[in-house]
Image (cartoon, rainbow, N blue to C red; front, side):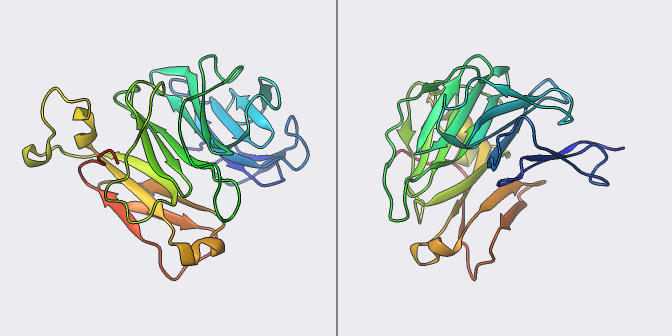
Length: 253
């Protein structure tokens, strides 16, 4: 069975394959010339609904990527590097940006509000950015944000307030994260009644890049596969990349 594939590119707009990669079509409009599309997200409950975002705003498609339209106004939100959709409400979006920040939209991307997230504003190689935003698939009140050079942040109230959770991380230069449901064993469970109860049900995979290698890395992503398998993709190969997996939870700093 054929399926749609969407590719976001740096300067070449969005590419779309309606037949599982057998053929490809480049979409120039409505993407401005030289747009960098750095984030894609599927709309829950809408099999052919997809969002694309980057340095020129947010765009949406409702036919699997065959046609696109701008959502909102250019400049409403800084350059977007990551995008997440509330699984229980596809009109609630979270965007991780550069300069580092997390923005939330309650109307499908037509308007945005910057959330109160105290992250680093400077780093040795320029402006840091939020590399990944994740919404818990079982409890959309729990939102995660990974930040270049500044670790991991967690919200338990849908993004209204945030806590930095970095105990156990070997390096705070987080470039991607992934959530995977796991069996909650009694010895690893958190006490009943605590706000962290659901976190014991997940693995949090975090990619960190050591300082001496940092300038050689251009882009990297991790995805959870079946079971404990994790797929790691790197634009430029490295001699060594540490992968830190927290099997139980990350405690507040």
